[in-house]
View 1: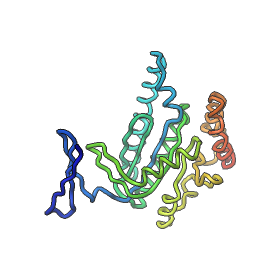
View 2: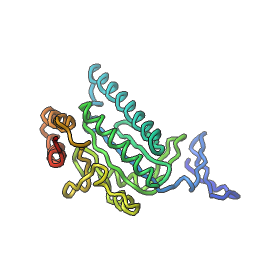
View 3: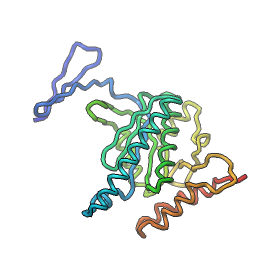
View 4: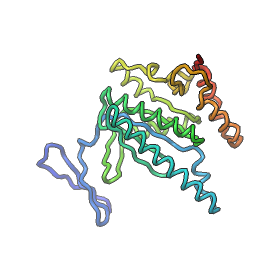
Length: 242
């Protein structure tokens, strides 16, 4: 039986959520505006349904690799700017910040770009959405609730693309701080909004992420090839050579 009991006498009203023999104290103060980044591993569900030992081992190896990547980029962001907390379940990965400051925006942008680059260079198709909004986060109990989660998941599902994108709400909030996505490697990509260009500056060699995206498209099942088309053209458009 699921029941709620209010606990009063504290600055923030709390609720004790009871389920069986377990309980958790929730505070409305844990609902905060935050920067979030949601990533989905494309095609992971199909791989996970494999009945062969090889297929299962491949899924476990990929999953372990991705977990280490999300840990690494979160630590890097915390060391250079602001804390970014990672959580994951199955083929979904989430990074979020404690608050909504400009410094935390830079942190989530940096961590997200590093993560998607690591995925693509590793040949793992993924789609990421950077969002902004109210999020309840109880890391110890692994509970995360908020409209922003629904928004980024819905946007990712509707894009049908690999790559990294920024939601309209995140763009609006960033601009309120006079922070423009175009200054951080994002450019408009038609109806899909602002997308990451994978551009790290002029170079005398071809963008390695672009080459990898083309390779992944060639190897992708026929039904998935179109998920690469738009982002490949986008990266080509903004590539610069010395």
